[in-house]
Amino acid sequence: MKKVAIIGAGISGLYLANVFNNNPEFDYRVFEKREDFNFSKGYGIQLSVNSIKLLNKIGFKNLPASEVFFPSKVNFIQSNNSKKICDIDLNQFNDNLNRYTTTKRSTLLKFLSKNIPNNKIKFNKTLNHLDYADDIKAYFSDKSQENFDIIVIADGVFSKSKFIISKESLKPEYNNSVALRGILKKYQDNNISIFMGSNFHYVVYPVNQNNEYNFVAILQKKLTNSDLNNEKIFQSKDFINSLMKILNNNSSVNLQNLTEIQAFPIFVSKSFPVTNKKNIFFSGDALFSFPPSFAQGASQSIETAQEIFESIISNSDNLYKERISRIYSINWRSKLNIFTFHLSNPINIFIRNIILKYLSKNKIFLKNYLGKIYKN
Image (cartoon, rainbow, N blue to C red; front, side, top):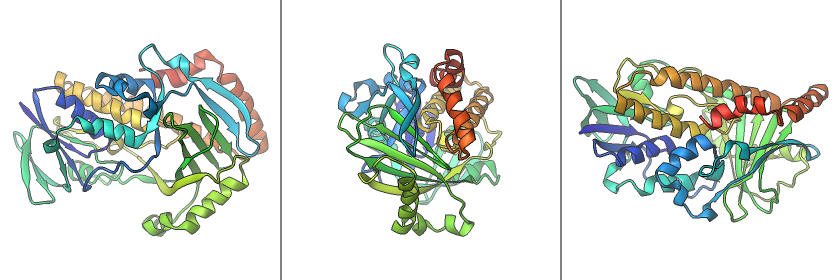
C-alpha cells in the first residue's frame, strides 16, 4: 500500500482525496493549514462538462437539484446600456448525463469533504521540510514527521510547499486587476451574463434554484507592492466603495442588492514549478493560476487531480508534457478574453461586437475555442 500526502484541502486536493478514497491501494492523508473548512461564503463557481464528468463519477449527480443550476446560455452585454450583443448556447457542449453547471464553491467543497473520514484530514498543519531517500520524510509545522511514497502539492497560488520542493522563486505575479465578489439578489436572468465595460467586466449567474446569483467583477487597477502587502486595503469600505462607484457609474444594472462584497487582488502564475522527483506532483493553483476570465479554475483543478491519479496508477511520466500544453491553451484564451472584455475605444468596441456576433454562432470556432476545453 502506497502512502500519499496531499498538501491543501481545496477543490483539487479534496477531489484527489475522493479518488484515493475509492482505491484501497493507497493510504492517504490531507494536510490543511486552516483550522477547519469555511462553508459560510456563498460565492459561485462554474463547472464545465470536462469536470462534471469526473465529479459525477464520485456522486456529484446525486446532489439535490436545488443546490446547483444548469444555465443554457452565456450572454454578452454592453455594460453602459445593458444591450445584449449576442449569446453562446452552452447546450451544444452538454451530453445526456453531464451538463454545464454553476453552484456555490462551498457546496462543492461540502460535497468533496463529506466522504473523507475525519482521521484522513489534518488541520493546522503546514509542510516545513522534506528529506528524500527511498521514500519521502515530511516535516510539519507541529513538529510531527511522517514518511510517504507520494506527495501532491495543492495548497493554492501562494503555495509555500512548492518553494520547498522546487527551490525556485515562483511567486505569482499581480495581474494589475482586482476582483470584487458578492451575492446579487432580485436578478432575473437565469443564464450567465457577461457585462463588458471600459477596463472592467462583471459576470452574473445563478448558483442554485433559490434565486441566489453570483457576482464577480474584474477591474483593472495598478497597485504598489506596499498596497498589495497591506490586507487592510482590500478590507476597507472606502476601497470597495471606490471600485463599486466605477461599476455603478458605467452600468445600467442596479447593483444595490449586492451583499457579502469582498475585494481581492488577482495574482497569476508566470511559470511552472519544476522537480525531478517522479513521486512529487503539483495540482490546482499550486501548479498554475489563470486570469479569471475563462471560468476554468475549478474545472482545471479537478481535471489535473484526475490526471495525477491516472499518472500514478500507470507510472507514466507524460503528465506534465500534456498538462502544460493544455495550460498554455487555457492561459492564452483567458488573456484574450480579458483584452476583449475590457476594450474602451468606441471603434474597437464596435468591431469587437460585430466579431462576437459572428463567432458566437460559428460552430467551427466554438468547437475549437470552447469545445476543446469544455469537452476534452
